Length: 72
Image (cartoon, rainbow, N blue to C red; front, side, top):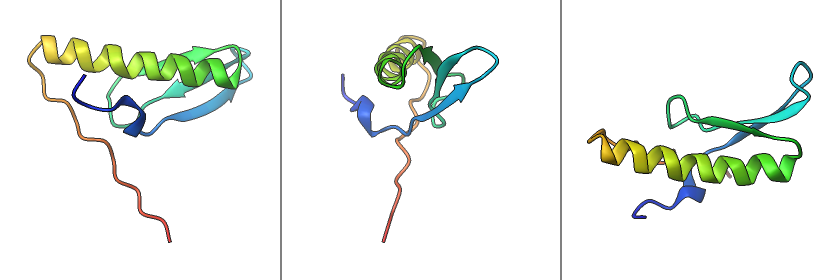
């Protein structure tokens, strides 16, 4: 894969309603998944990023660049 999946932002939040961790990828519209543990949610998030990119490439859609975050 040309784009490094780990460079995309990933938000992990606990869902009381679903009793699971929800992983969302802000740069990739509709890209989200879940896991029963925090670590599982991160792994599932990485898989979701790869799948999202592969599918959108196949459909000829543009792939957004990872967001650049600067900290001081």
